[in-house]
Image 1 (cartoon, helix red, strand yellow):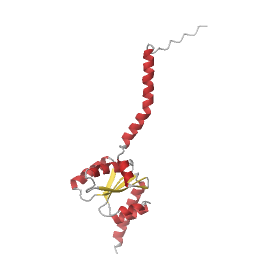
Image 2: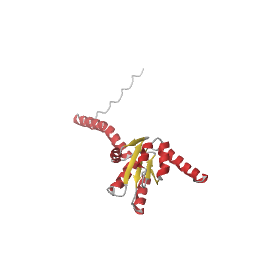
Image 3: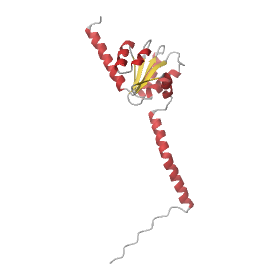
Image 4: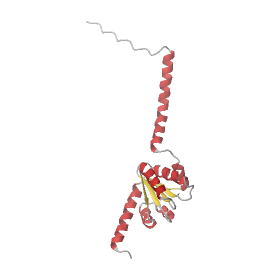
Length: 180
């Protein structure tokens, strides 16, 4: 039986992890077996750039945390070496970065175990499909470009019509009111 001090420390870790899972926009569980320190450092740098938290987690403590966060189905994936990547802002970021990294190894030593988004467990094929989406900023730019396209087209058409009719006609000066 562990002493009270160790038990309290473990409870604190579980509580912190549960809170992170509940507040996360999305997350990915990863089997990182076999990657080198240099590869791990490169992965952590890329994740940091994308504002993704990444940590190696203990399966037993994580089991308690996922149960507490309402993500109990993830317990099935908690065996072997496990790390967790979560994001609070960009829900696509952890999946995109981890998937890009996993592709380098063709699933040999770094694989995605499971993922979740907005409190729901995602099937692995959905995690991989979401991972292929562009970054949040790119998606926003694409939407904005789509919204601006009709306005730009209208401006081009109006300019062409005006040029065809001899240019823009300037408004005439208003006549002065007669003096009384």
